[in-house]
Every structure is written in C-alpha cells, then in structure tokens.
Figure (cartoon, one colour):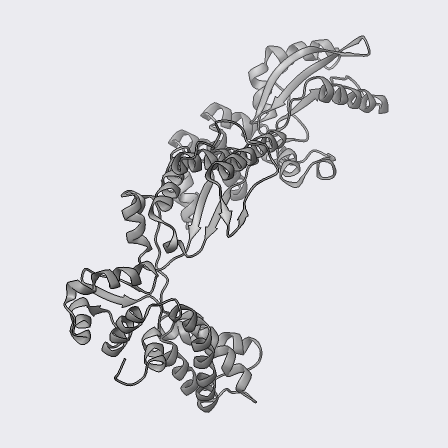
Length: 487
C-alpha cells in the first residue's frame, strides 16, 4: 500500500483514475513500469481501452507508449485537423509482431497467414478502433482484378486501411502500388464519411426548418420567413408547435451529432415568450435531453422567468439551471471599476470608487455607465470624487433618456401611477397592501393592474404578496420623471 500511495501521491485526478483499475492491474504497473510518466500513460490507456491484466502486460512488454503516434505520415497535410490528429495518434512505429512464429526467411503469404491465425493479437497491436474487413480482398479496375493483402476499417476515423505485405528492403514501386490500391478502395468501397453523412442530416434539418416555418406561417412584421429548401412532408410541418419544434430540434441534434459538434441557441428576454411557446420549447429540449442530443439553450430573462417556466412545464426546474445574476458585492464592484482603469495606467481615489458603488448599487450595467462617464470627464489620474459627481449627472441623464425612458413610455397612466407609488415607498420589495393603501384603493382592485405590469416585465413577485421592480434604480427614475405629490 505504501508503494501504491507513493505512485499516485498528491494528484486528485490521478487518484480518481487509479481507483477505477483493479488491484491486479496496479500490481502490474508498479512491478513493470518504474517511470511515473509512463505509468500514468498506461493507467489512462488501460481505462480508455478496457484492457485486461494480460493485455496490459502485453502492451507494457511491447513498449507501446514509446511507439504509439510515432509513424511518419502525411496526415497533417492531407487530413483536416481533428482527423489528422487522431490518425497520428493511432499509428505506431515500429509495429511489434513478435507473436508470429515464422522464420526470418518467410515469404509474404506465410506472414499473412501467420497474422490471420493470430488475428486477436494483430488487432491488439494495431490498437483500438480497427476492424478486420478481409484478406486477399478483390478489387476490379478496368476489367482487371487485384488483391489487397489485408484490409481494415477504423470505426473512429471512418476510413479504410490497406496493408500490403513485403519481405525485404523498401522499394519505390511499393509506394506506387499502395497508392493505386488506396485510390481503388476510395472509388469502390468507401461510403460517405461521417462528415458527409452529417451534411446529409443537416440538409434534412434545413428541410425540417423549412417545413416548420411554412406550417406555422412565421412572420416578422409584414415579412414571411422562409428557406430555400423544399420541406420534407411529415417532418416538423404538422402545424402543432410542440410536436413540430421537437421534431425540428431532434433533426438538428442528429446533424450536429453526426458532425461531432453541438448546437446552442441563445435567447434573450425569455420572459416575453408566450406560455404555450415556452412550453413547446421546454418540451422539445426535454426530448433532446432524453435522447442525449447535443442541443441546448442559454437564455436570459427577468427574475420571474423561473416561475414562468414552472407554469409552462412543471418539470422545467429539474431540467434547467437558473443561476441568478444580480448586483456585485462592494469588493467586486470596486474591482470592476478600478481594474480597467489600472490596465490603462490610471486609477481612482477610494472616495471616488465608493461613490460609484453607492450610486449604482453594484449593478454591472450601471457600473459600466458610471465608469465610462467618469473616464470621459476626468482630466488626470487619479479620478477624483468631484469627477465622479460630475459624471453621475451625465450618467443619470443618459439613462433617463434611453434605458429608463423606453420602459416608461410603454406604460399606461394607471400603470405609471402604480409604479410611482412603489417608488414613494422606497427600493422595495413592497407588500401589495401597502401600495394599495398609498393609492387609496382596495388591494384586490389593483390585481389586474399589477398583473399587467408583471406581463410587461416592469415588476415581479419575489414572494407571495410582495412586489419589486425588475429594473434597478427605477424607483429613483420614477421620482425624477413624476416629481412632487400630485401624481
């Protein structure tokens, strides 16, 4: 046990990997592999390839770690990067065929027969992913038949490997003959690669999208959305949003999976999606998750999004993560202000950063605004408290004119009055009864008005009976745009 502990000392990841191997494997590694780096290589290889103890002994005896990926090739020039790297890894130099019982004077056919009679050992030596296709495989070119000594297929590279056996020193004509065989295999045997197959799946996905858009008559203002692909009948074109969206995302997932990639949809302002549409999206993503399809969504929205998703589909809370992004704490907010300035050779005095943190309440967007205006106003470094106070006037004016005003202009007079009452009570959240009292209205009479403001994304309910602004600093804006007491 002491030797085992010394072999895997203080690296948690290696310790976790080591725990997955049987004790007998560790005895082999400790006894036969003295160098730590090589021992780790065999540990990972044994786990990845599922080697038995005897196979592990065989690989160590053949010094596999010194031979794998060492063959001279043109893969980096001829293959795209992901495939060229994988192809480089799977080839060795030299190959170890010590399991053959032929003499040094053996002929090529004897070597071939020896390899076939030890096919299991041959596949082990070739490595993971090789599949035996046949020996003396016939290829017909221009009415003449040629025979490949050994033909293999690699299931990860989706490519054929041609083995031509020769006894003696290498001759240039051998390479020409091998090139001829490779070209013949490509013409006669090779089916579309996984990328080509993925292109076919992608085309089918586009046909699904075309049918989806056509069936649901998707429009933007007076422009109808369509694609230059003929829809495939019965594929995402039934006019049922939930079923069609599921079919569409499943087809997209199949295409991305075939290409070895993933699809991520980024959607902002998710709280404005109608409940039936949100339910269809959640249902489709649920089906993709069940089928392990590489399709997902990264969405952003207001705090009520969690409740909206739960109302749309009760299992939404289990299907997604809902991290909340709010204000930074004072130390984080200060760092967000001073670091960009210091990167440019400037700085703030502490009183200036404290003023910005207080004015912005630590919200990132407002920190950006105050930082921008402070930088523009300051003539020299460090940026002072007076610089920040002057910048505050400009930052507030800019926010009032755009960020806040856009939201305010969408409100009815009654809705503005409701929000002004909330602002009068302070930052919030506030009890619905307190707002009603200030407006001199029965609480239940304000229910429809409150619901309308929630739908518009202006307020939300952090707890039952509580109401809060969704937009930070909106309470102060309401006091500025509706001053006095006669609102």
